[in-house]
Structure formats: C-alpha cells, structure tokens
Image 1 (cartoon, rainbow, N blue to C red):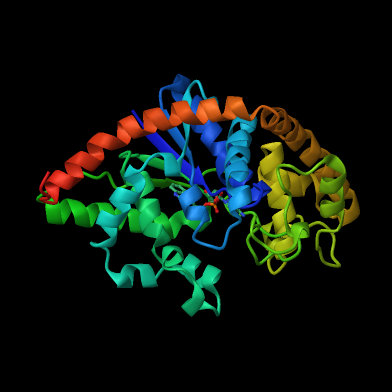
Image 2 (image 1 turned 135 degrees about the horizontal axis):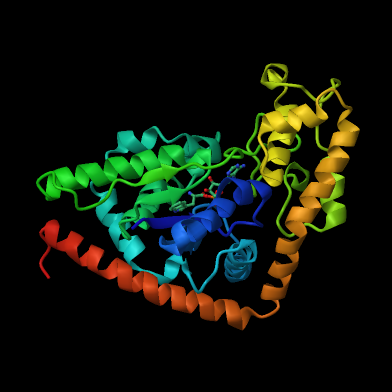
Length: 337
Ligand code: TYM
C-alpha cells in the first residue's frame, strides 16, 4: 500500500501553481487503484510562521486552505486532512532531526536563499531550518510518496538524506524511516508568474497580477490573463519556437494542464495565431475549470464548523499514526523514558 503525504502552507491564498503542480495530483492519487492508497494532506501552519505573519488571519487562512483541498476534490471521508500544529509529534521529531542534521546540508537549500534574499541576517532561524520540519512532516508518517511541484524536489532529497542517515546511525543501517519518493506529476510541475516567465508563480509574490488565485472570480481571471506578459511573436508551433520565450511557454503549459492535453496538442491547435485569441480561449478554459472550485470553496467557508470538524477528525487520525513512530525514534536514540 502507498502512503501518500503532502502539505501546503496557509500563507495568503492558494494559486494556480498549487493546484496544477500539487493539489490536482493529490486527488488523482486518492482515486488511484480504486482508492487503496492511504492519503494524508496537511495544512502546515508551523511553516507559515517562519516568515512574518498576521495572527488575526492565520486560523482563517488555515481553514481556507483546507476548504481548497476539499473543493478541489480531496474527500475527507477517504483522505485525512489535518493541521500540522494539532499534531505535536511534527515538532518533536523535527528537534530530534535538527540535532542530527549538518549545517552544510541546510546551506545548500536554494529556497532559503531565495526567500531570505539579501536580508539573510534578519531571516528567522525557523526559515533556515524549515526543511528539517518538512522532513519530519513526511517521515513521522513513514510516507512512501510525496506529490509536490518541482520547487520542493531539493527539500525531498534532504528528507531522504535525513532518513538514510538516521537509519545508519541509530538502526544499524536497517530501514526505520522510509526515504520518501518525490512524486512530481503531470505537465505543470512549475507554473510561472504571469508577469515574468522566469519566476515561479507564488502566493507570496507582491503583485496579485502575477498569479491566479483559487478565490479569483471570472472577471479577475480574465483581467489577469489578458494582461499576462507575452512577446511580439505569435503563438509558437513547437518546443523549438518556445526557446527564449518563457511567457509564451508558460501560457501554453497552463492551457495544456487545464485541458488535460500535451503542450504539443495545444501548439498544434493555436500555433501561428495571435496571443489575443489564444488568451481568450485560455480565459474560457480557466474559468470553466476553476469556477466550480471557487464556488465550492466559498460554500465551505460559510460553514467553518464543518471544516473544523473535518480537521479535528483528521488530527485524531494523524496523531494516532504519528505516535508510534515518535515513540520508536525516542527509543532508538537512547532516551530515558
Ligand atoms: P507551498 O505551500 O509553497 O506549495 C504547496 C504545493 O504547491 C506546489 N507549487 C507549485 N507547483 C507548480 N508550480 C508552482 N508555481 C507552484 N507553487 C507551489 C509546491 O511544489 C507544493 O507541492 N514546503 C512546502 C510545504 C510542505 C510540504 C511538507 C510539502 C511542508 N511540509 C511535507 C510536502 C510534504 C511548501 O512550501 O509548499
């Protein structure tokens, strides 16, 4: 049996990249093999506080992230949806790993460099050690598969290294922690900003025009796509013509992912046309695919008691699964207990 685990941070609103790069695949894995996989999907609020956050907004953003999971098709009857902070074993395991992880491994993490920017001295220690908490999120459940977008690949490799080194040091090289497989699925593994095709679409980017949020209405989506950066050329016919045209390639990638087509199919249909026509088609497709999710999310958000009940049930299950792993780890490390 596969045990699937993945998480998102409740920072701002979820955007199209989160959906195409991860969430949509979570649903596919839940439904795979007649629903045999055991799936756990977390809202990682402890990660969200590694950058300045608004305490008045965190709980609501946590609910909204859970609502997006459900609206996109995660079924709380078949998958467990939980909030990271309601499972204390994540933090406990994270500290145990922190003491065992060489600084050199963290120094290699490019996401810290990107997020801390020039202000490295002012970034929190939590932002620096964040990938260790992420390793704990995964390893505490002995997850076998972790569906994520491409940007998380390096963190997954670190989780594999942490698992391997623990097994070596504390379990005579036998497998205790399972090195998780990154599951980078589909065609939209890296959705780029609508204003700069070299930057990842991100919920934390300053300008809202760079992304499509899962809460955007049809007019907002249309406006953002129509204003998306392109170049003076026409829609490319093939990969070769996408070279050096990251914005064009990105819009084609988004269209392909939303339409469940290959990029080649999209370029066959639209290659040689003006971007204005292609953008109109992309608006229609985006609205058709996203508006059911948006309206389901707002329905769910109007009944926070229902979301809270789902999260409570998810936390119970997650705590139950996490407990034995933590107890075993403590034993293997030789603690008095
Ligand atoms: P986060 O919250 O930034 O993103 C959640 C998921 O969305 C994917 N994603 C994208 N995929 C394609 N294109 C994009 N532009 C794009 N933007 C985001 C991410 O790859 C991710 O899969 N560190 C993680 C959260 C985390 C986690 C975990 C994930 C914490 N613990 C344990 C898996 C397992 C993060 O910041 O994701």
